[in-house]
Length: 398
Image (tube, rainbow, N blue to C red; front, side, top):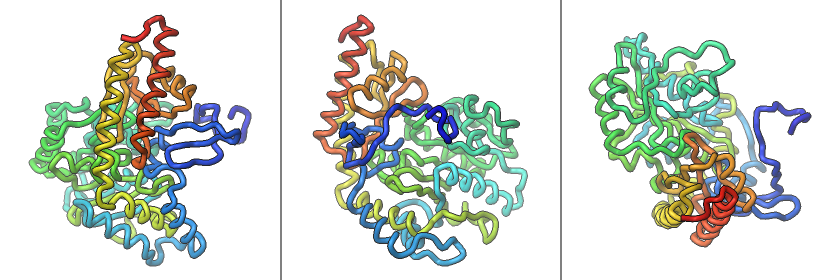
């Protein structure tokens, strides 16, 4: 896009798509690509899902935007459904994951403020995390490549090594308000926190009077085979940020919290112009219609098991290309031995779309509606690409 009117902040692939159909994207010339990128885990129900299309078009013909100066019935309904399905008592709707994280951070800080401890504003975070691109969320993520050039780092975040409980405990002080963590790191390389670790973090928070915040922007809305990844751990957070999959491609985010955690979020202390608008709420409710159907999440688990087993065989076949399969549900990653950018380009040459991540991983984030046949097709495209990479490197198979 060099020379165009757009900011040059994206290293875009030389591809443009004219339409989408389920797990497939189609270019203007008719070339079909199997999409296991999913808009970076956004297109939870694939492209042009008929129920989502109907919900959006029907709402668009009635009302788009009124702002939160007024009641929005679809917002109330989606909030109640999220509360009924989770640990939460309250929901604040946003347009993105970064905004949901901002709300989560502010919720935690206000909780301590209204409880007479305004000095408690610091939040413990973890190396490899990605929480968004605002000034606060890049500070929370702590990655130098995102912080460089934007002035002083926003104060209030103490980062510790991934999965290091001892370092986490040492980082807690009299100014600590919360612990913020992704149950499964996405951008960080599909790194899964064991349930035992999450349980210990819950215990640490309870011991020190902290709030536990989960970032489920990427892992939520069925991606791991449960509605939310925290359900696998046997514990619950106090606050949770979600986005991506809840909109199925339409910009929707939300911050969920218990009554206790949200006690400081009173009239006037936080707001949004577009968050929770009628269009977004119509689509969010339509997504839940599908994901909460009987058997849907079990089908995700079944397909995920088949996918992981098939991918493991490809890793074994091409040890010069891949090191291991990571992840859970349909949030999977291939840890590469070759540069993940080269692997991702080879996938694209095979008309297969994936997403690079940290730790030299390529993410596989197919729609939750992907079929078993499409999974087989995808694995074969990965195998074909890996074979070409291995041959070009003079390595061959195992």
